[in-house]
Length: 189
Image (cartoon, rainbow, N blue to C red):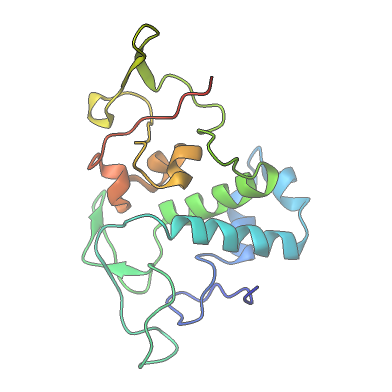
């Protein structure tokens, strides 16, 4: 397992955020006790797992280059980025959007407390199916552009299928979250 490295733009980074940033994110929230109960090593492992899951997504803008620690190397992770704007904030190579900080911290705790189950949809998600029919088995799913609650397309990365709230957390920073694809949760039988 690689060493925990939250250095922004580093060629060896393994996490978008540090444990201290995640601690700050959870401070005063309903999940503060659950996060605080984890050991430092568990927090680091959870943050690295969350980062690797978020690395499967497609983001707006372009990856900054070169890395912040080696002018001859690419940065290890997709963030930081440039040439993207979300809610009036322009991405620059020295920042990580608060939405990505929140998504990383939130996903880290979720992955630690309830790891994804292969083939399962997002836990606790309802309302993605617009219509089902048993005879000749037919399903119709909501489209993100219809203004329905967060949905994730069956062709979307598995992490969004299992933790669909990430679409809302990442907002317009993630191209997956912009409605560029249809979104539908899997239905459990």
